[in-house]
View 1 (cartoon, rainbow, N blue to C red):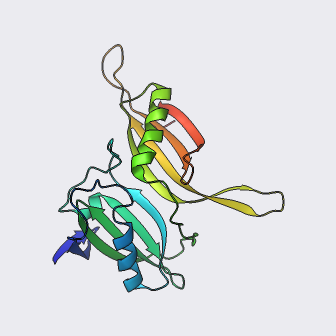
View 2: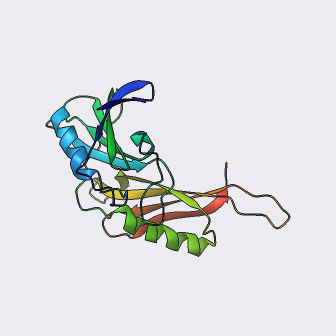
View 3: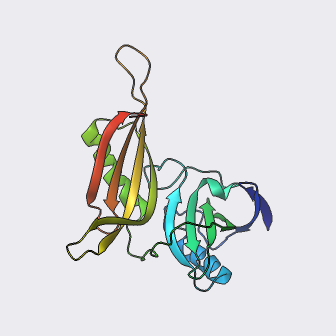
Length: 204
């Protein structure tokens, strides 16, 4: 057991032999162990988001440093009764945990276990990049529940989405490069593109 400093706080790294090292570092790789760790922290814990902190690779994994699990996937759990949040980080077969109290953050619905994995998500992202003519774009991914348009009866519909952010830096004809950004919301269950914004210069 080793100690890791995460954002100035000390967390515990657990080297997990149960997580096969041959498995790609996709979003679902650490789902079971993160849930187990979260339930030990708080039996009412529910998963509210999954985020990767580095660009997705072509196999749906995230490029990270196994000696620093916080550079990989982040699984956020919240307590049903308090403002406590529990984070599990996963990279290269290693995990780390972090407990924080985050006051004033609205509680969101927990995620259902019916979302597409990141190896399927990257295929959707690649189609968008091809559509835009910017195959060089890197992409970050965030799985969460997003409140969408209100229904006729006044209720607000909620959809679990993969929210993608694209970072592009194509070469210019006159030399140099231009930084562009784009975004898309993907239905996490069906893979349908719910929203997309073509690449525009950063800052616009």
